[in-house]
Each structure stands twice: as structure tokens, then as C-alpha cells.
Amino acid sequence: MAEYELVHEIKNLCRNNQMRDIFFEEVECDDPEAYLRQRLKGKQLELSVEKGAGGTVTIHATVDGLIEKFVFTPI
Image (tube, rainbow, N blue to C red; front, side, top):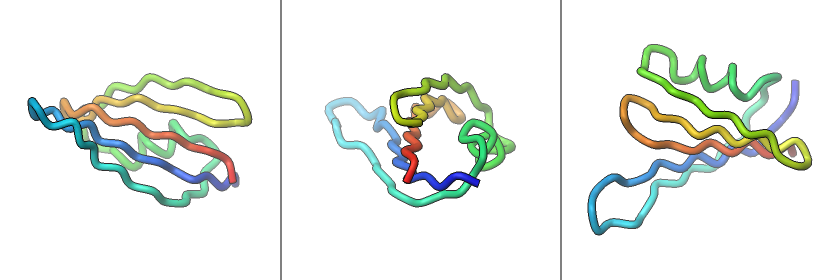
């Protein structure tokens, strides 16, 4: 299983508030997209996956109407 640093950003949809909630954690998984689908199971979900240099995977998600971004960086 691969080990990743996960940066999870939740965009604040309130007007005039530019702050975001940002969380950091380490996760082990073989497939970041499958990991997120399992983690967010039961929620209304739309995903867009981008694979970057060095194995980084960025997933833009709409989760129950909330815009979130997950960046998986290999450790």
C-alpha cells in the first residue's frame, strides 16, 4: 500500500469570507479515488481526478453541495 500526505481543503461558501478549512493527515491506500469514495460513502458525490508529476493526485469534489479539494502527495 502506498503512503500519502493528504491535504483536505473545504471552501467556505459564505460571501465576503475567503477563509478555508484545511486539514492534514497521513493515509495509506492503493487508490486515492477509491479511498475517497469509501470515506464519503452515503453522501451525494461528484469527483474530478487530476494526476500530477511525482505521483500527486488532486481530487476536486462536490460533497453534498460543498466544494472540497483533496491532494494526495506520496511520502
